[in-house]
Length: 101
Image 1 (cartoon, helix red, strand yellow):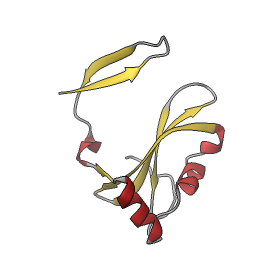
Image 2 (tube, one colour; image 1 turned 180 degrees about the vertical axis):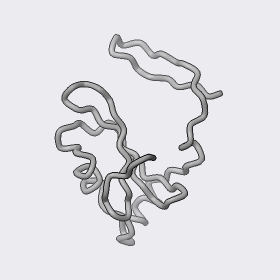
Image 3 (cartoon, one colour; image 1 turned 120 degrees about the vertical axis):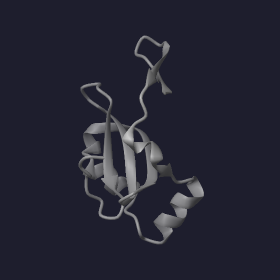
Image 4 (tube, rainbow, N blue to C red; image 1 turned 180 degrees about the horizontal axis):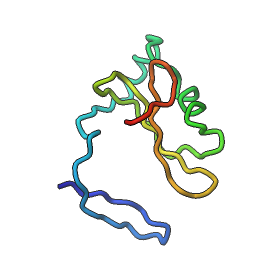
């Protein structure tokens, strides 16, 4: 069992145990690897991925380019205007919002 730590709105760091998720076998790329993928034109830009996730109405908190069983994808953490943090997965090859990741 893993531990998930979050920074709560009250300013306190809360850590809770969590079960292993289906995404834990994913490998996220390093900065150099991301640059290489972008330079090779095999992936869409982060801006394109953000637009696909309707990020114009949200603040981008974190973005990762990861490799999964179906190829590369962006894992985005967004803060919409309603204040509820949400995650979006965008296929890095097509720039389309991925379902079911």
